[in-house]
Amino acid sequence: MKSLYRPKTGWRRSKHSVKNGLLILPENNSLADEVARNEQSGSQRYRWLRAGQNSDKCRFGKIVETLDGLHGRSTCIIFSDGAGAFVLSADDTANTLGVIGSAIHSDGHYFDAAIVPGGGSKYPSPHNEETKYKIVMQGNKIFKLAVSRMSESIQQTLLRCGYTLDQVDWVIPHQANQRVIDAVGRTLDVPSEKMVSTIRYFGNNSAATIPLAMDHSIRSGKIKRGDIIAMAAFGGGLGWGSLLMQY
Image 1 (cartoon, rainbow, N blue to C red):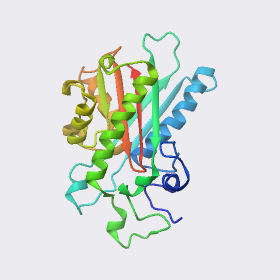
Image 2: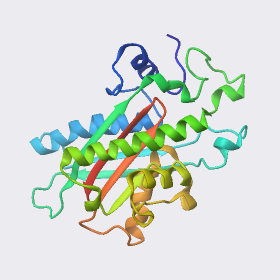
Image 3: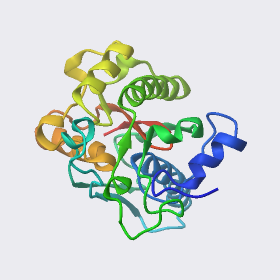
Image 4: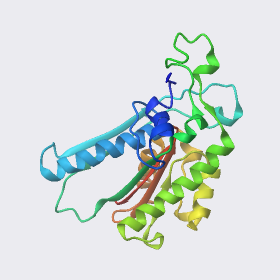
């Protein structure tokens, strides 16, 4: 199987050999890759933290440079560069719960919905055809899948953790665009004032959108200590996931 630059071959393997919904851990960058990597390393590091087998703090960061070109309004209008990070620590005396629970999924049947064709073995470098090294998206399909999968994942995590949406103070979805954010809110029946949106400030910087949105909300005084926050991410692969936490 010849590889593309994004998504990586691991996602495509799930189309042929893995039951839909089971997690495939990919090899490299995209928002979905970051979701999987954070879940994989985060779950393991959480166990290490609790067992005292690691340093008292774990840092999860992402620096994103877009692979978008000026070939189409559907992608170039909103993408941006960005960086964000979370720092986790073990603290049995903390007054908040921290990470409460999470869910993560993948479905390789839609691997071609958002791709960067060039850079893998199928279209190797050098970049002799520029369009093959830029993001190619099936916009309408991605929109519908992003809204449905992120909404379902949040509901699944809440159910697993014994929470309801009424107990959630803020929802931070992947900041794809305002239409996606609004549609997730409508699907979940969450008031718009509880849906965090930073599109107008930062645009869509892929895997950095959620840490940037949370940081901005904390600095602006919107998110306060003790608040319950539901996060959801979605990206190429396809991969998606959610996390419930108390700040």
